[in-house]
Length: 344
Image (tube, rainbow, N blue to C red):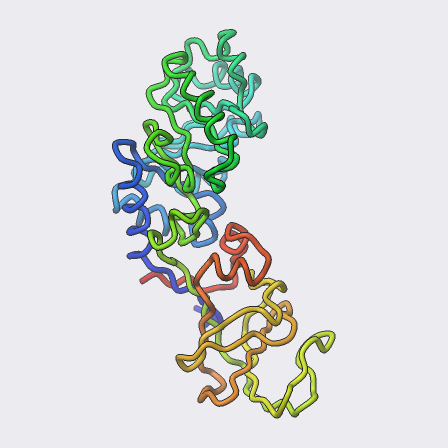
């Protein structure tokens, strides 16, 4: 077993507390979980086993390859991208079904699934995936065993956006028109729009992992992941000397600098150059110079830290997003495979 020089510290308590908080906000609706993109970068199986233990029974992935990783663990798994011709061989994975998005997918499912249950996405105004309400009226879904009719909000993270109410009204108008057992509209930010948006099932993603997609969730969800990395070298940079590529930072005085085993190949992006924040010796320290592929420099002047010590990086996703210019989604799903993922 290799000893890796950087880690993700992952909190089971925070993950499950976030899901329970969102489940409570969902009211009478069931609360599922989006676990696509390898559990938003945290590790899909590890995330799923913890969410199932907390009571989650509806999981959402993007592809059948992602479904195969979490199938058979004790919850229903829906493949959001539907069923392509190439996916037909995977039909039969335990408790896995597609979210049908097109007329061609509906026809394919009818031909190969033998009446098995499916979910269906209807487009209510995002103009991304989904069948049209007119297709439903024309009988496209007649006779399908639909568990969940779903749609997706385009602007849920903007509570005042008129499109939210428009999509809600269009979706509510489909109640009883498909034979679906359940209806589902709200993602993480959609849950915060209020009980009218919950319908029968909510599908949070970002907020489960500590992301805050809208102000109403600030203080409700907790950070789940903290990056830690080992110090490779402690050095003194003389006044006027640069650090890193292109000499974007120069020491204003003789400065003690720690060079840390982390970089954009790990998902600590170049946007953190001269803008990121870490914690060393219990004190906040700035990232200095340009983040490179494998290394980050920190100003640790006056801090007792040595080669082989560990530093942690700011786990607050909204703050990190503001510093880096990346979205909270990108910060999570971009976490690389070189990390050791440690759950506590």
